[in-house]
Image 1 (cartoon, rainbow, N blue to C red):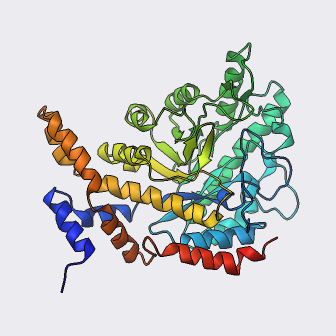
Image 2 (cartoon, helix red, strand yellow; image 1 turned 180 degrees about the horizontal axis):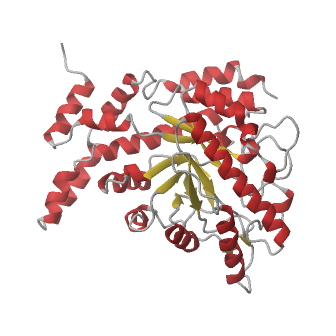
Image 3 (cartoon, one colour; image 1 turned 30 degrees about the vertical axis):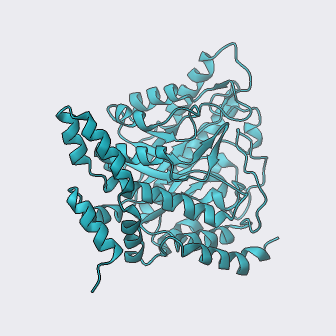
Length: 415
C-alpha cells in the first residue's frame, strides 16, 4: 500500500524530533471559543440603541441571523465544518427574556435556551457583559462615568454578568470565561486622565467583590488602544488593565487588534504570565484603525501560538475569536477564522523547538535561523487534513461547498 500524505509528513517531522501523533492528541484537547456575534453583526435581541462604543459591522451580505433560533442554527452549520472541541462566546445582549429586562437585572434564566442548546450540542459557553449599544452608554462612558447612578447601573450589570457566567459553568461542567471590556474614553485629549481611571478601578472592585468558584467562572479584562469616537483616550488602556489584573490576580485579555498597528502581542505573553494567572486571546486581524477583520494565517498568529506552546502556557491560555465581517458569508467568516486559529496552534505543536533551542543555547545562531526558516515549509497541511479526517470534518477545499449549500437553501430566504 502506498504511503499517504500524512504518513510521509509523519516521517519528515519525526526526522526533526517531532511526534505528529502527540501533536494531534494535544490539539484534540484544546478548545477554541467561537463568538456568536459574527452571525448577526453584533445586533443581539434588544434593539435598544446603535452599536456604538467604537464598534461597527460593515457590509450587507445576505442571510444575517434575525432570531436566536436562526443564530443557533447558523452556529451549528459552522461547527459542522470545524474540527476539534469548541465553545461559544455570548454577549449579554443575546439574552432571551419573555419580556424586556434591563441589563442590570439579567438573570441566568434569561439564557436557559442557550445553556440547553449548548448541552445538547456538547459545547461550553463563555460570556461577556455588554457595556455598549445602550442609552446609558451613549456618552461613551460606563463604569468610569462621572454620574454615580450611571456607574452603579453598569456595576450591577457586571455583577449580573458574572453570576450568569457562573451559572453557565455549573450547568455545563466547564468553567465560563467572563470577559469585561468597557469602551469608556474621549474623542479628543482630556484635561484629566486620572479621575476616570480612579472611577473605573473603584467600579471594577465593586463588580468583583463577590468571590465565585474558579470551577464556575473566571474573569478577564480587555484593553484597547483606541476606538471610533474614542481616538485620543481610553480609560481601559493596556497599562491600566495589566496593573489591575496583576494586583487583583485576574486574567488579562489580549485582543490582537487592540494595539498599535505595528505592535504585536507575542512579546507580552511571557512577560505578563510572570504576574497574572492566565491570558485570554481574542483573535481577529487589525487593519489600520479597525480591529475586527476575519482572523487569517498571519505571521503574528503563528508567532502568538509559538510563544504559548514554547512557554508551556497552554494550561493558562484561553483562546477565543472576536471579529465581525458582514461583507462576506458570515458562516464562512466563522469557519475561516476558527480553522486558521487551530492550524496555527497545530503548527506550534509541530515546531521542532528542541533543535532550535539546542542551537540557541550553544550560541549557534546561524543554525537557529536556518531551522526557523526551513520549518516554514514543513508539511503542516498533510497533518491538518489528517486531524480533520479523524474528527469527521471536511478537509481544506471541501467545507465551502457545505456553507454555500446552506446559503442557497437557508440564508437566501431571509429578508
